[in-house]
Image 1 (cartoon, rainbow, N blue to C red):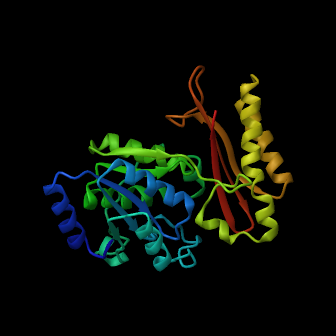
Image 2: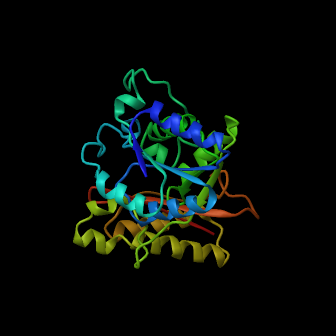
Length: 279
């Protein structure tokens, strides 16, 4: 497994593989890898002859009061895990390599509307940071397929829209959320939870399961269902930001006969948790 730190080194290896007509799968990450990330890599290995993983904590997607400085960085452990899974190349750029003219003047890639509601309403600019860095990485790696987890459901929808709107010949492969035995969706930020918060955290997914069951039983007042779920989370010790039932493809208000997804975000202490469930 190679580790490269510059775009020139990355492109040289990509061009070599392309000359051999090899298919390339790409998994972008911010490191601190857990079983959810590794599931993406395992699936990537099934889809292509070559697998590229990036490890880059992207400052453009962090707000001024968010955890950029304290975000966990575990590069050596990450590299060992990726090597064990047969990854061909790990791209580990510095901030200056990704944004050579600095963050403020950097060109942005934005998906309007879809990126401005749900999590986007509570983290202004976050999804613009995500789409910008992923667009840059797609241009650098030029993969045939890129893999993302369904845990970040809104992000997945936004990236699919970006790829479609910009006519990139990249397949976006969604991989199911990997969960702890008690149902908590795996996330690098789970380690911020103290013992009591960790005990409470699975109730977020349980709330989504209960809401989904009510929908399957015929309830259709989605606004009331969301308000009720938020009240339940609040009484359990969460600070809910939203619980919404939306169209599973467009994230717009539900239409009769269309598949649905229940999306939620809530805080426990200093930890922001997100989760979702298809109905």
